[in-house]
Length: 277
Ligand SMILES: [Fe+2]
Ligand SMILES: [Fe+2]
Image (cartoon, rainbow, N blue to C red; front, side, top):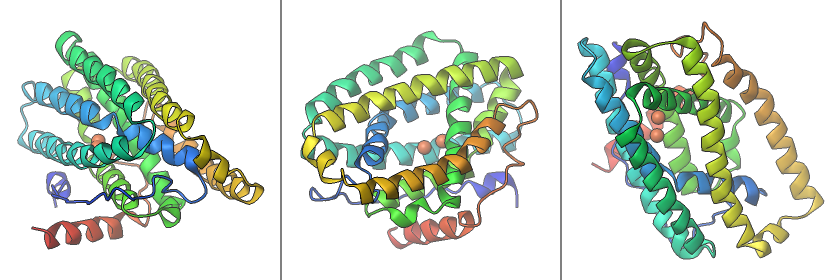
């Protein structure tokens, strides 16, 4: 089976009721808000990645790479649309709604400006820096079983999304290598970009935490703290070497070890997508 066939485009239709629990990771409001906050960026960040990959397609000749890039864009297009639905609910039900909306406006302008003004090499290095980080994180999340400690519907949204991030892990790497290349540029810029992205995630999360002291206090117990600290230790022990490996000169997303839960997750979400067509 060619790699292109392995990037299926699933059309999902998640539902996000107003009473969904935003503390969707058991006993961990800060980590839950970190993810929910980070997702507020996706309706602007993922279209930026799509614009970047589409611009790179003009420089690519071989049909298989082009097909993979097309499928990457289609998957990312599904991601941000589903996340945008959740984000609307988050802004409505969480006391940080107005602050999140203000941050969103800033992020929208930033990524629109980068598409307009930055060279393709810069944008492709950002895309690959983002994709290599999310793939490393996704593999670790599945490996440590973090989804066992999550509540629906945000669990399903996140699991589907990160599983597809693993599926299309080679696309931005190949696009960067074929269009411009350069190990030192990619690595240096990836570090800068990941730091830039994580800082923005922190701003969204901080807004949610500051606006919701009651929820933070509710989980401020020794038992809850022990559970979330243990989970975070296990996650970092698994994720850190994977992320560091993406900076090595011989990093190749085709050669990374995939978690055993990856294939069952693919089958699960393919069946779910088929059931709603
Ligand atoms: Fe995505
Ligand atoms: Fe992606």
